Image (cartoon, rainbow, N blue to C red; front, side, top):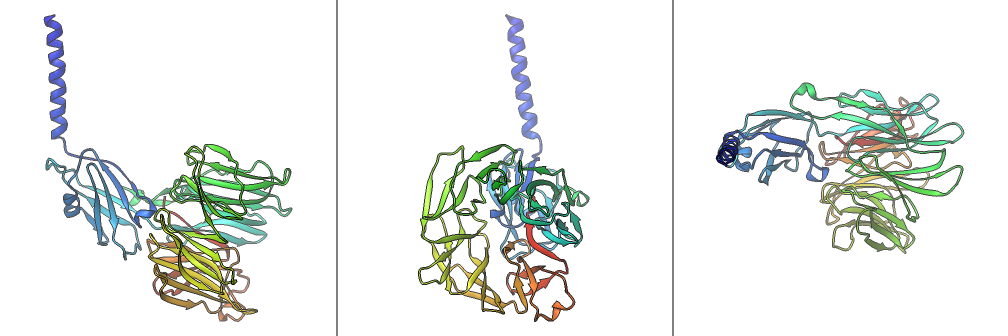
Length: 446
């Protein structure tokens, strides 16, 4: 009995000693990762081994370049956010220092990260089209074989890869998923490296008649298709872990996954239907009327819709949680694309009008619908079927433009169907790349 008492006392003493040693141990960084895109460009989520003083992280940590930023959080979790108005032109360096609630300092750490997305494009080649990726230094990397056409290109929302549909000369369409390993966050500058494509995986079991693809920031993937053998439409979904399931849902057009995950927007003759994904309590919300989903805003639940009105005009509407659609613009011009910043404070709208010699222009609006800037893209037209993407890290828009015959540049760009066009989101100034493409998108920095 005495031996048992001594053994128990020794165990208790050992536990108390371990607790004291842990309490005197300096705090350490347990996890660091890029935050969701809705948090803004360049945001980092950090978790420490114990609760930290936010004030000490703010006062002792340093960011290079010295962009304005702030810290949020409580307990052992913190978030570093760049302030609005910053632009990121190179990788960021963080010297991380701070104290826990007992006043113990953590060992300083250096972290490098690059929140800038990269360009992925369908590139025109002899004999067909090919998917390529452009790195930040301007170099291009091949991601696919040359197909007759590549009608579908969809970057995965978490930056983990791309989905592409390639068709041969007989029109047989196949869908492939290509994983891409990105190294945009590292404790050393040398740890940042160009993306590395993996082994492609075929998603379609037989040649397809068509394929519509959508993704969200979780990396989930939705595929609508119809095979040449059955001719029946199918809707399938893969989650970020690769789990596959069939969806039974009727739609009148392409289904779009909600960026934050867990839901999808289904076009229907009665309107747009917001539906939960399988595995969740089913809930349907419908927005009646003749509306098309144009684009999502990064902050949850916000989107831009095109409302086709009875008088044959169109309006651009901002939809926010718990509020009716807000009209930002109305006119008779055709709407060919839109984009918005985090919560819709700034919106960009592509319009086309005119017969024979169409006029393409871009508007910058605020959330009240006031025009902040506008520019006619003289001598250029938008590549049909392409859209407009916004990069908040560099405050720029991306689209595919091709020169009109009257464009003076068309002589020296003979044979180029379209080129990547970067547009400053504030000044709306154009910067055209000399690359023959048909489609261009941002690949998020995963």
